[in-house]
Length: 264
Length: 265
Image (cartoon, one colour):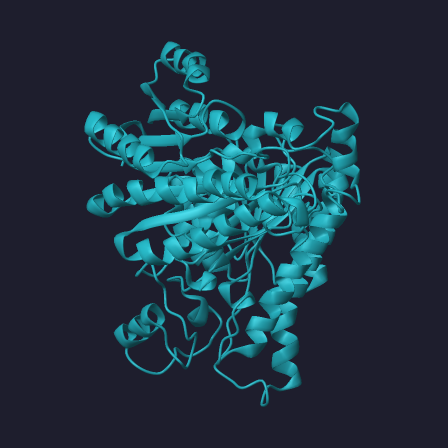
């Protein structure tokens, strides 16, 4: 199988895109380090993988804290050896707010979790990749990195920073044959808001879905031309491709998986 | 749909990226129609595919001729009943004596030929394929753009403009076909080790050329290739195979750079 004997560390792997990626890598032979801030969610993913005959272990960490990241990466290495593939997927949503109103604590928190966690994980893992002479890093960005939204400016800024972090790191690591790429999910059906303790946007679930598909002046002005919301598996498929041997000449890119939303 | 039931058409299949893509799709089990202006050059590839147990047919095609493009796609549908994947890999690096040189001196005929093959050829094949894909309510079109269509290069205005056109055509067609569940994407290769690489330069297949492209040369690829190697046809084909797969059904309108980070943003 394509990922046999490969160790994959995925943050935010307890739910949504991270979980779908973890299960997909495991189906393709990888040993998967399932990292999440929630023990219960991490255990759920690990259980699902093991029941399907795959290999996975849960690692609980708040990746926005460097000491926890370092401890986690040490533990992963003891369990599975060097990390070959790092998927920086952990992230939080924000309640709707104007950039004019955002307070320092909220601003720092969204950048800490969505951006600085990636720096910490990369710093902890990359020496192992350099020692091996290869590696793959895939970061979860967002369509919101490219298109400004009305309602969650700080989140958009954090994801735009993820894109340029991806490019700068790719540039630095090219000499080591380590590729660094991103996926850019558009509207995707996950529990991101719930997991982040953020209330759903106003209106019924059906109305919110319609707004996302058709375009809503209060969110993105642009809907999803393909006419359906993305699923975690769509994003996982892109992550797995970018992490594959076949993608060795692709670096510094963001692959948008958003049904054309970001291209309009 | 199971991959082995899929029908794929690859233009420019005789060499380089088209050939690698045809082999890759065939290995996945797809039936592959091989199109090229130089149909004689397809026989060897068809034999290779058949020996490996793949189904294939050879279709002589000048993509710059709209009627030919149309009947080529219709012929495939008549033979195999459907059309799931079109890969527009036909393209030329130069035409006549003036297409590689200062923009101010490009002759109309040379300019036209580059546009006819690289841009209109892509349009004609996509139009014909889309008619069937709309009927099916499914399909994948993958075009070959180029880093040269996004980053200006000296002495390559016609080629660059044709590939910039391919990029925008890809996005416009993606928007149009989204309602039918048909996706349209492009790959944008950087310097890639294909027969076209030599043809793109006056000095032909100069061994120093590869090294210069990797390090960066002010007169062509200013920036070089940070990953330190030229791309291979297989590198580009891998991205095409992903975009053509069921797994990529939510990906459309994207220009996917496969260039070792030669284009920096």
